[in-house]
Image (cartoon, rainbow, N blue to C red; front, side):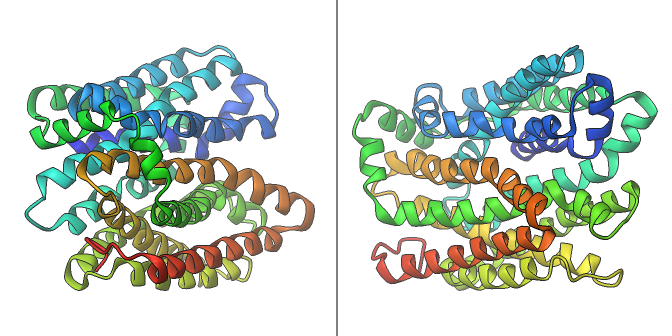
Length: 386
């Protein structure tokens, strides 16, 4: 049920990618305007990432999760009825409220439900929701829009979120220890300052920002890359782009299993970033025989990094009351990177071609590897790290 709520958020975020042409035609807007429908989704994440920990403390995990799913429902219903581009943008910001805190809430639940073991596997499984959402959206939204109109996609996502809301309301209970820890965090005015003074948390946040920059850039631009650089038709481009999300699912789970077994998440993150740098470099060097391989590599390495960082993050909190703020700070940089990735890369592509955009992604992957190496060299608190 927790997963379904997170999946509704991913579907809400990514549903627009394959139906950009429909939106452009219906709203009579320019192609560059439609890209903001993705970027503006993350604005709420940037604004609410840190306050989200305090909100968690006041409401508790279950009530907050219900509010997040309600935002998905409200945003999608408003978007379905939107008659203007400005209203559609506002609806996307409302949807983004859920995106801002769904990871944090999920980690709080999982940390309590699996306190006896298998936390890595549970986090790995949970973090597959963006990948599954991407695979679904890349292959399903365009046919649905062609048959029923693009607004039908909004109604379908709202329905999925509504089902999730009812299930959460009836069956999910808030862990008592999670509530007490979150309440303590909310009542401690020094919590956020204490977390922000933790250099290890900032290093983890930068790593998560690096992988988010790369992952969501590929998720967003893969269809355009395949159409413009490799001259594939829209349906074929969408198929290959969807494979990225599909491949990401097993690798997030594999990451959790590896972490639980070998207890060395930082090393897994470093190796993955190095592999990701290679995959980014060959972005424009593909052929019909390697399209699938590239989507596999980017999905695999990103799918190994994200659970690894989220596994380490709670252990960096100096006391349980700081877990919410620790995850929130990591998410803040994650959201900023998502917001910045596509505009930065596509600006370089517009000026100098696709390889220049790929080179930026290479640099970000190398930065991620170096950052985790610094973390490994300087971090002395190893709770879940070793």
